[in-house]
Image (tube, rainbow, N blue to C red; front, side, top):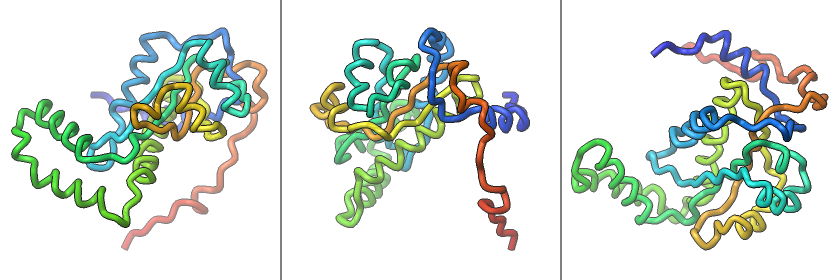
Length: 216
């Protein structure tokens, strides 16, 4: 495997911005999307539990229904793809066992050999002082970061969106009945030439103001 050159990584992350205006005539090619979709699948999570589901909306009708529940933001309908990052609510032993069964399948080991791990996960996640849905929400933001960074490497624009009504999204997309809850959105596509924000310098604090090196 040949790693991506570090200067290219920095250049692409400098290039990306929270796209305010997408070109509605441009669609992400299917082959590129399938690669980008895999960044969601490959996202790491605590215990490897993957407490999420990613809904990818490309249909104009569904986008139109979601727009009023998104503060009427144009990105919802103009972006090529809309990804809803949803958590699995109230994670239980059922999801833990599903994960262990998949682990046994992929790694060729017996489920019974992982009972110690099962007890650790149950103990950690079902501690009365532990908010499991808050934990799941933090996990799903890891997926958002992976997705946006990978998109930038591919020259695909994104915009993370928290300005929406989760309950209405859950109703429109049928998430509630399956035990999921929408948490954050990412619109993906290609920037419009008319988006003035694409030409503005990126504003960040100096490196020395946000990075502290501890060497001893």
